[in-house]
Length: 386
Ligand code: SF4
Ligand code: SF4
Image 1 (cartoon, rainbow, N blue to C red):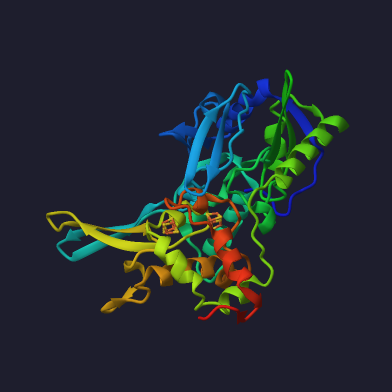
Image 2 (cartoon, helix red, strand yellow):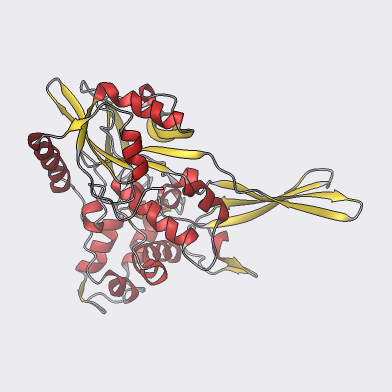
């Protein structure tokens, strides 16, 4: 697992031509490599056999409810930003068997699922997603109860971070202080540079394991000019970010405006489809389902991703606590940006922009906060009736 905080090490450069050696080094250490691949018109995370499986030369265009891929001449390995998948897919799977039971003469015998996991090497993790993983680490392992499955999946995870050389249309990581440069939680962090015929990766190790992997690849000390080029590229990414979210006193802003008419406005547009929670790298709501086979000899309990956008999620004896779209959207956004801070000491949003891109009607969390803030002269004083 990557170290936190980042261990400061010398920056080195390796050439694009040597990128496959990174895969060889990780495979030799028994890692299952997971990274971005092109599938069904989107860039998702899946097992990779080689560096050739990466979406080479692709960039993405994103906006509210819009996602398009474009092929370019430049053969970048990491020209796109984040897609509909988050790394939680591997650390906190969407369906997980918790136990199975078998009927015997004496009743049922129950076998708990063993928490075993391959050693994952995540390739191409963006800074916002490193923050999201750190948030889920807290949720699943830092409280009174530890999630054994998450802990075993996370224990041996290798992280190759990629600093973002461009921002997506819906990113706002600079507002959430989560990017675009990875500052902790990685084993290796690279900035991809393409200039004329030069194509190389400015690299730093964030852990002893990262340094060990790096020793398997031909590298040289980075030149001052190369570090300046990378610095300017990352600064330009931050400067060009199109969306912003003002987080000043955000907890009080949302707590004091729970009856703001904007919630009715957004509810009129929201389809309660739950897409935003499925794509969000920090959302962790689940339900539990028991299933039996037709003979009644075998039963299983499964944990599955759920969403606060469904009516059933808040169902308790004879009714749903949050029966309206308004109450469900308000619950989600207030939890993300306010009550999450009370619960876990951090915002539940890392500014990745996925919920904006993948909302079929383009609802934008930054815009919803702005609308409430702009109609409110000071915290707790709404200028609108409500
Ligand atoms: S905000 Fe958008 S993505 Fe989320 S539930 Fe509503 S319509 Fe679906
Ligand atoms: S709330 Fe939206 S922008 Fe924030 S982390 Fe979740 S998906 Fe990303």
